[in-house]
Image (tube, rainbow, N blue to C red):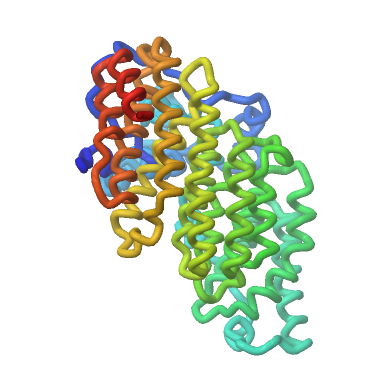
Length: 444
């Protein structure tokens, strides 16, 4: 099994392996729904900050979606701080960013809301007033202790609901840092969640993105079944039409499900969550949202809280989600942007399987067969959409990458190379006729 150097980049980056059949690039990116225009246009007025605040957010996106070193980013940041006039001129510091990622700038600010949740939280840590005997309690809280928690949470949530942007951020940081304090217990998080959720639900029901999205970030660190359920529901495209809101919620799911022993997320809760996430991504058309949901499924599949039975069930849900996406891709007349989510998620999944000493536990025929059906769907889609792929270099790379990484995953699951799967990858590199022949051989 050969792993290309380009595949060893961050799964969020856009790798660039050699391409034989594409002459150019169409520049196709994520669709730009009208509902997101208000966020980009109104950002400065709502947050009362200068446009220079946008530069670190762009840097955060470069770190996640491009293989840029942290040192390079640091120097670029100082350059922008020392010469801010560069940002106000018609000469953006990262001219090629959208062309390389396919993500429009109007979603950049929304992505940054979950790209660096921990780092941003440490930029302005609010004062916490709850004593350690409350946050570290292993026994049910007394009525006096509960009153202290409720008073503290209510004060901060009032700031979230009514404060100006600076006060909202400070309250969010205080709430998050309290949930992350050393020695915090599940007993405290339960009481803390009970105190926060009523006002959080009210804020999420309003139509103000800034308050709602900061509230979602608080919920991610409560790690109770109720708070996790609200996050999952906020990523449901049938309930939330705002793509940016779904993106923030989906990006926080991975944080929320990695709660560890101190959380209230047991095996049954995680399994139920995985089923709902799979249902959400089956309905979503935004590849960036789908990507974050696939990453959340992988985080759940690797949780130490799972029973053996639930672990196998979630792996089936995970690979079933890949298959469903591949069916949607195959049904499209033109190259589908969903392939971008599938490719990047498969890169992350492969790295987890390579580094997981228990990977043999998921090497079963059912999952391998599901993966084979997915690869066939993607190969059939490539044949069907061949003309479009010739003018869309970015999509061609993703289709070819799925077939290549899928072949490697089959080798990991089966414990041996699969020559027929490898032939699919070789076929797409050679041409449409060769790929069609490889598909017929793959089915035999």
